Length: 359
Image 1 (cartoon, rainbow, N blue to C red):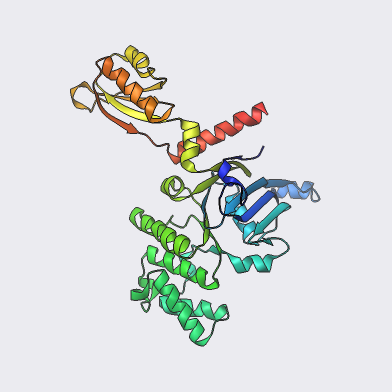
Image 2 (image 1 turned 135 degrees about the vertical axis):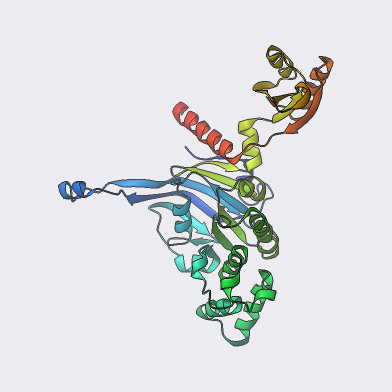
């Protein structure tokens, strides 16, 4: 069963969206299954395989930030390796900027680049400028053209003031920006980032994400595919996300829309109401579905926390609040509760299981 895609995944010209720069159709991949020595001795000719990807199809638009989510082992890294032409798909087609990842691997590598997040791949004894000059030489740049490109990238990744310092004295965030600058030497149109902020503290990670959006996406026009387990990246940073589960792409869309589909419109109210039996009657006014979370004993004055799923948007919320007011129930606060990334993934996986069982 294919992924549940929202209408924004259409092709060029049908909805006013940018044309797809990456197009995947029914990508599948098998790997040899690990075997124990006893099995190798008893059945040396037998070949068991595990399927890492199962018919993955998706379009990714030019200039888009597309997040790839899923538990470990879901197939995210395998999909990235196929796009990077490091491994071949066993079935299906992948097109990047009009080039087939199987037949036109050299052309694909000219337009798509994975950002290697391993800081150890930098030469820590060299400065940032020297690191970039070294890799610029490997890309065939010489003389004034090399110096100009290195200066341009140092400015782009905001390392001009630290360009001649040894990389050994750089923070993790600075090293990440230098790695990104190194990747941009080839002027790729598509970037692959595999958990780029996992080694950064929260503040540095936020700054790096803002830098990616401002300088890489908006200024350079790069399309970014981002594999992540970070809730902020998935829910607030990516334009759309795709969710992989055991090699299947089970959902594609804006994370907020997927959360709205699965979690409804969830709100938390602080009310002064001590009778649990009245929670259901009061909460269900206006069509809400009550999910009680008990009393907040830490709240002063007898306040309780009431968690509601209220379908119908703000008009429905207003009706619920009006019903509580008419019943004489004071409401101190009403807040929209966002679905966590873990809850979103769990709900998507559960929905996929139900649909697979029904279909």
